[in-house]
Picture 1 (cartoon, rainbow, N blue to C red):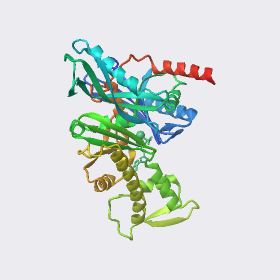
Picture 2: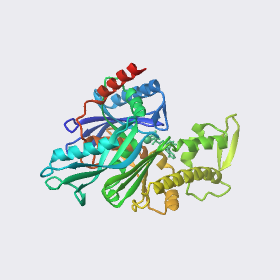
Picture 3: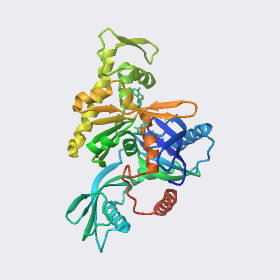
Picture 4: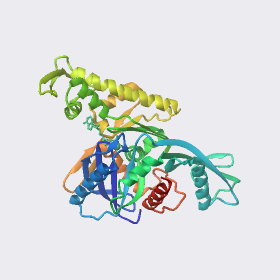
Length: 403
Ligand SMILES: Nc1ncnc2c1ncn2[C@@H]1O[C@H](COP(=O)(O)OP(=O)(O)OP(=O)(O)O)[C@@H](O)[C@H]1O
Ligand SMILES: [Mg+2]
């Protein structure tokens, strides 16, 4: 990836598909060149549910992208989300003969991978946490050390194989090689957390339309990954039901409400109902509906973190991103609920003719950072890439043989 300067990335989300081109320097500086976003179709709760619809949306996004910069796209980095994504901590050990060298690192990563392999799961990332040599733990770089056994502790992020293949299928109609598949939550987490936050401990929440992706980073390494199949669209749906209006109208109203404001009882909003009649709702009441839903989501997140035993690992607090994080007052709401600092991440993408700004650009930015991969995520690779599409063709041939 590093020899290629222009990188194409596509974030396949429940509400948006965002495609972008960026020039990445050998130092990892990312200079965005073009960006397009289209409304997503055929994606539910982060997962592909209708391949032709997603293919059509990808085509629209790539066509729009080419209007900004006339590049031919041969390969792409893409995101994967959905409830099938899981993270777990694992380790691997190998015996040593002499001084530890690069090939021992590959062997020990392979050992950790082998222990984490399951027939139904696709491993997407093996992220280094630390090494141990014999009884000496917490080693950052063991090269050159001597010992009898080398162990590695890793965080493995995987997806259901079928969810992964469904994503790959959405590119099968185009002559594009998929360079990397990166989980959305992981991409967002590397994009929005600062080096200090990662060191101290931070929990990144990417609140999208269909999912909330949770990533805990502590002492610079990923400790926990979780995808909660609940996002901000459920709030617009509830509001539409409550106000008997369209989801589009509810969505607009949601964006005007500050969930931390003290609205006085007489402050109202006019809502066009489904039958064409106009009704008035108090802003306070509408704000309470939104707050209630976010309270439930945050409660769920906090419970999951406690169950995973990682609730004490992020004294740096939460960083929120994803379109849902743009809800006015949401940072304060989470701060009150968790009693931890909360920061809303805003990503700016300067382009030739405009600057795009928003929390929803966290994933696309993270995809570019993962393309550069300068240890920031501690991605470990233990095998040469043979081309994902090539592997997909093998799998499809195999599936055809079975059925
Ligand atoms: N200003 C705003 N106030 C409140 N909510 C907002 C605002 N802007 C966007 N949203 C919400 O953000 C959500 C879309 O976020 P985003 O684009 O990050 O989702 P996505 O990546 O398509 O979905 P997912 O990651 O869940 O697959 C929508 O549900 C929308 O209601
Ligand atoms: Mg998203």
